[in-house]
Image 1 (cartoon, helix red, strand yellow):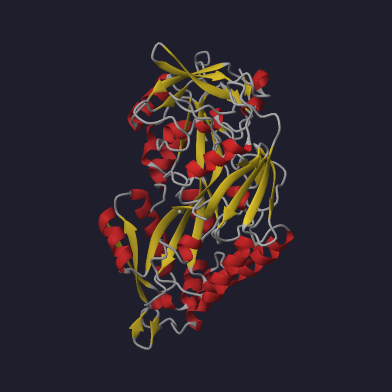
Image 2 (spheres, rainbow, N blue to C red; image 1 turned 180 degrees about the vertical axis):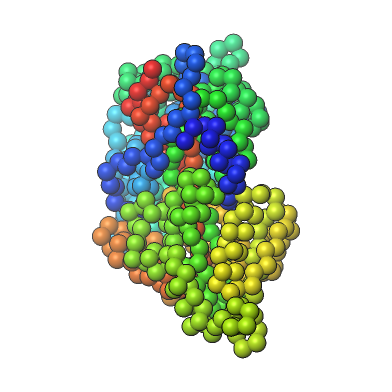
Length: 512
């Protein structure tokens, strides 16, 4: 799709979103093939990126999204997540859990060096993990870590408050060497350098792929606001950016570029008030879950930038369970049958559903501050109305919306959350995002068993968990959004961006 056509489609379709794996498999191709915009009329510009001078360049304690996008170029992690969300060894050569699952022992790969030639050791890894445990960006995902310490230069030991059989999926966290001044050193492709008050990235001579990098140096342009970033991309000062095509900001990018999609853990879903009202019934929740056309939603509302899902785990992940997902897939006949079974037959007089003389009526809550979210709510309301359900869409500003969620003043709501790399749905089913008051001891136990399982036992535990999920339908997942890396036309090809690192495997790029 051409860049201009893509933008037009976004304006017409209204994208969506709100408000948050298994054994390695062969490297997948990008989830969507790159789609070119009109051919350029001039020679390709030099490769340049943006950074926010008002924010920290520290990859662990910094909070700027623009600066975080540079992290993968400067730093390496213990593990990297590929586009099937399988943890691939980075600075960690291997990792083994203890028999009870409360301790993991990692071996640091030999030979890795920071950009000043200092060898990377387990002590650096432990210090970085301990710093990340209290950093806003990583504290949530590492809340289960109780300790990280170095036994010797090559051995890292991590303690957990509860077993996690897929802990490596959480360890795509930069390992750094702190400096007295400036950002810490990393062991990645590049290092930060400054000259005459301007920052740039200089190839790290101690990285094994240094000679294969497509660019020896990458200038950085100051962009503190979204508008500045868009303007710099349009002018060619910045030649690569990431964006979410469901965001209003994406509409600002223009010119000749190629878009390379990558899957994310950002889940769009429908939440149910299971503590009361019609959605107290699992049959009603399952019926509603089967009424949503996820393929159509991803194709139209997200303009193809989404991976439809019936489970709170990406269909690209090795732990995906197709059998369980099929039990919640789009099927209006099954949805109608489930509502009949729940005691809500259709009235021949008006085509609506009633239990005795009480209509099946629900309130669908949505944030009014985003037109795209309202479009999604409208589509879902139309689907339910087609089944004879009376739906009231309540559109509230963000503060009122969150207050209504906390007070349980809804039957359904449009939600979005970014899950961790191990796709732990605990926060949705029993944590801070469980606005609907869902409770099921059996499912909670199955979730704990799946999280703890490692190796071959993980598939069996996952099958039990997702079968229970399909039976109870505590939420209705819709799709995982995709992000997009935009690169000026003609600069590079053979890109494989990932959620955590848009410049993953840059040494394999083809330029010119």
